Image (cartoon, rainbow over all chains, first blue to last red; front, side, top):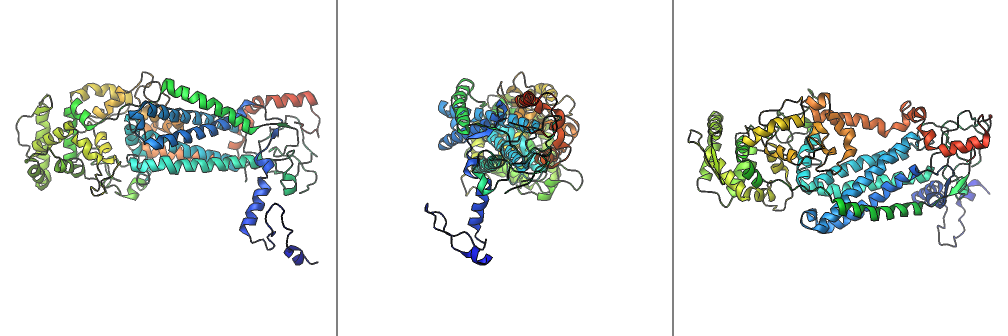
Length: 258
Length: 375
């Protein structure tokens, strides 16, 4: 049987109702996307039930704290949406939910800062984890803008002062027309839709890349050599289901790649 | 995929050691329980900062001389906003930032075109229900006057205002040759006192046909001009204190630090001298003992020294410096030298102390070559 005949042979039907064709000519974008996802995010890696033995310290948990604080921000923000941006000035419940939003924001940035610190001092970008760092940093920058617009949206003296002062910085770089911080018609849309969406997208990408590459291992102990050590196999489809090696790819680069 | 023997490089990308059970869902649920209890407790006990918004009515009541002087500067277009430049006026103004050609403000032009006389004074007075029959002719007379005539009227009025007597919502200015200014300014003052000026700015000031609006650009700029043109007696008393709090080294224009800016001092907590003023770490502060936006320290730091403290282009300087620092921060994994800092600091030894202890226990203090790190 020729190679062409082999490739074009129809696949056996999937009893689970899955795909019946194996993308013989390699032009099916959905099939290619699926192959990519299955290669880098098999379920065992996406939802692992174990971690490398060195994952024993509290500093690994601060990223999760930021994630949960973000969920709290979204939940409290959704409640505030129902009653509008002035609710906290007229109602004790409004002030309460505004305060939940405020303190969630403080916890969110606290989690991000500690997570950044631990990621920096462990050089967590090693081994192809560069994009994980980049997505995390972009989450942080987008969150800063979200926080700024939130401060303006308080619609109190804080909001007046911050909007009136910050407009000079926005004008100075020519962005005053794109985000006029003295116009709540515009600020509301940015704060409630665009910027949280940006944070969510970058945060999701960050977490997907964390799952893709796993937790970065420690630096090798001083005086130790790893000459001759056999690297674990790469993330092939066949091995991806193995939780023993899940999350690690052979990669000699010192800096980050994908 | 199978691979032959290879060398582990210092990047330590691969881990062939042991693994331990770990439940990420439990970790997230744990934090969720902590936050769903802890944050409402924080919110209930400490609440959140909510200093009331300032209003034109309060301004006219609390600092009438500053309000009238500032309004005069809007009428004769000597205010900060009137001379701001882009994006409010096409020509570069006193607040325009940049160095030579490099001025992004100028590149984008006047996309929020403003005429302080028309937008802040003439329009509100023209639409006010309590406008007197003298107001419309006064506005017409001002518009029809030559620039030199307007300047002469302004000077005369400013001088007369210095000795004006303010009594319960009205003021007496000695008669003088200040043309229609007396009528215009007293009408605007009355409008502000009645709350009508606040109401006017609640409507859509750029296009009344739209009616809906939550655009506070014009009133914010008006507030920001507080102190322009002299200021009231309360301004003068507060100015040295305010000046000192904003920056001991920064020379402020006369009258700066008046009513609107005084609110920042009034709202200041003892620990935050200067409240939100840029040169005292700005937004990283907050009223009372509330935590501010402390995560903005990497930005506000640029306002604390050098050009950020004294330059006319302080904001542009701070934004550029923040941008320049952000780029290597974003791309740190790919920058040799910077990415090696963690290895040099050796903080990781403390962070992974358990791991290194276990290696030492297993392999002794002097490991032999070809040993494999076991997890």
